[in-house]
Image 1 (cartoon, rainbow, N blue to C red):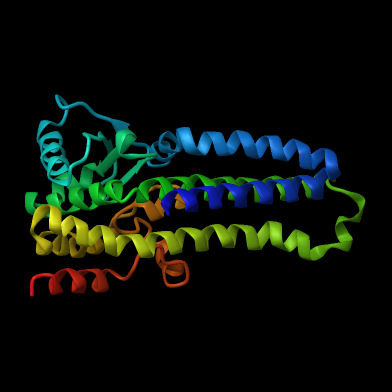
Image 2: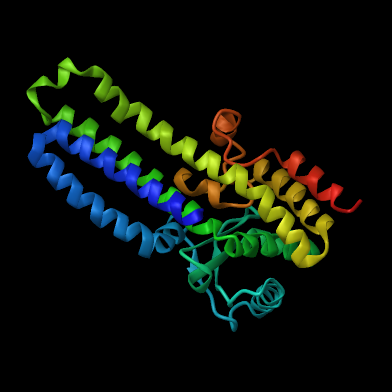
Length: 281
C-alpha cells in the first residue's frame, strides 16, 4: 500500500509538470518538463532523505558523539526487529524528532538537541519508538516523498509566476485563467492536503506500535504533551514542506499556529494521548 502511494505521488508530479510545460511552451515544453519529472522522481526516491535532512539542517552523528542516544536507538530497534538506522541530530532548541529514508535498511532517525535536554529518558524512549514504528510500517518513504513533492510544487508555482512575469507561456494563456489558477493555487493546496492526509492516518498507528515496542504507552503520552507545550513556545526554523514528518508539528507556534486548524498535518495531540491512555485499560 505504501509503495502504491509513492507511485501515486510520483504520477501526480509527472502530470503536473507536463501540464505546466505544455502551458508554458506547448508540446516542446511538455516534453522538456516530462524529462524533468523523470529526473525529479528518480531523485525523490533515492535521495529524498538527504533533502529532508537539509530542510532540517540535520547532520548524521556517530556512536562516539552521542553514545547514550545510539544505545537507546539500538535497544529499541532490536525490540522492533529492525536494522540499525542512521542517527542524526538537528540543532533546534524545540524538542522534536522525525524519521526519513526509503526503507528500513536506509532509514534515518533524527532528533533535535532540545529533545535530548528537555525530555526524561522514559519519554525520549517513547519518541524514538514512535519514529522506529514509522520505519517498521514504511510510513517514512511516503512522508519523505510527500515532503520533497511539496517543496517541488512550491518551486514550480514560483517558476510559473516568474515565467508569466517575464513574458513566458503561450499567447493564449490569458484565455485560460482556470489553468493558471490550478497551477498557482490548487496545486500547492493539493500538496498540503496530501501531507495532511498521510500524516493523520499514520500517526495513530505509529503511536500504538511505539507503545507496544516500549510496553509503556504513558511514556509516549507524556512526551507528546510535553513536546506540544514546548512547540507552542519555542520556534523551529524548518521548511514547512517537511513539517509533517515531525512527531509534533514544529510550526505549532507563531505563524504556524494561524494555519494549524486549516492545514493540520497531525491529529490533535489530545486525541493521540487519549488513545494511548486507553491502551492501559
